[in-house]
Image (cartoon, rainbow, N blue to C red; front, side):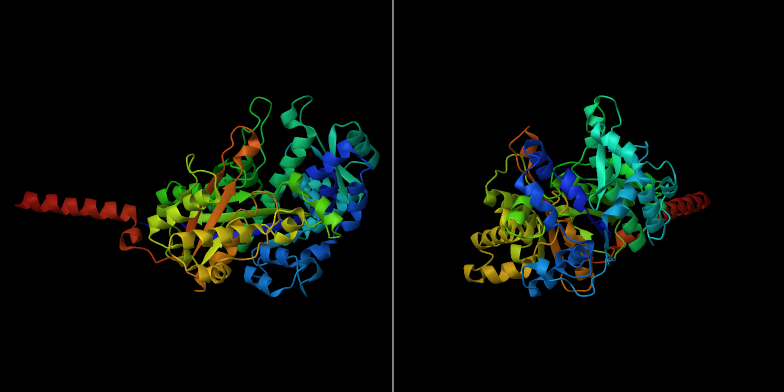
Length: 513
């Protein structure tokens, strides 16, 4: 069987302090209930500078300047351990400041909903025009057109027909509602959707710049964030995917959106693998943007404990899946893990369904997977809120299942868990940490011979939609490419031509007889 390959991955972070304050649901809920709350008054004192965010070790791991293993050698708290010489540009991606991102939101806005104050717009146009990857952006000239003035913007925001856009505490723009009374096109929804679109465009531009794939080679795009775009007649009809591809010059691509809460990216990658392996599409990109609503989810606990508000980062990624080239790591489509409707919700049932069962199909034992990448949330964010170290909890459950199955001695449990586990380093953006942040690192580690295989695990909380109490989970193994089989090396048209020629020769010889 000729398995599909993962040819590249790109990762983007956007520091968004003002978005955290004004659009994160923890803060907006507090503001509705008590606009003078102690939390809202203290929060500004706990916001990081862009430089601090760039030098934060987990952020450097996310964009590929450090490895997950490097975090083991850095004493916590990591927010007090800035990386010397850290840069915004990384091997896999980049970290963007908030002012540039607000400019990008206007560039990707197709319906003139974003208004930026004239001086601010001119300043971000200069910065984005000089950006090595975004400087050739389609519709960059929007930053030279239709600027707003401060009074006009404030009037729209105060009239509750537009969402505010702040930078360094100053109102610099707004996002207007897209319909007079359609709630699915309200200013609040349009703001979140434009954040998702802009951050996805950023990730795709990074992928195209940092890998070999060309925009016109992309044939299908799967967008797998947790937002939904539509109108009152179909609130989640889509299509983010084509809207993103349009901005990046993917003129030969079509696409669609896949949703399953935090497990969405794993579902999307399996779908992309199937499309590439079948030959329907040769080059598929899976991507997702950030969620402004999730900024500062745990900020109350961070502020209470005197920490920086660490959930100030929007996360995004883009991953390229293609036909087997005999070189890049393959996705083992013959061993896809899935949490079935009847699997059960206990930790053991979940891990059996998405770890043990697919490995049984492949003939592997749990310890034979070199690295597991489950929910890769940064523990420095989750522990203060009482959620513990999420990746470590997953690793312990996987290890315990190996002991129960007789694949591991109990005495070796902690050692093996340390070997196949990693520190979490992803922002708590829901779908963003769910397995995919390690793919870039996994590609390098497999191709450099440091590991042979890794399992990517996506898990989701379907009960959040209030339609079911079910849990969700999907997994797949990423493995060293064994090279193309002789069958896979044949060109189908060449084979047909050879057969046709042989038949003609046979017919000719038959007539001569």
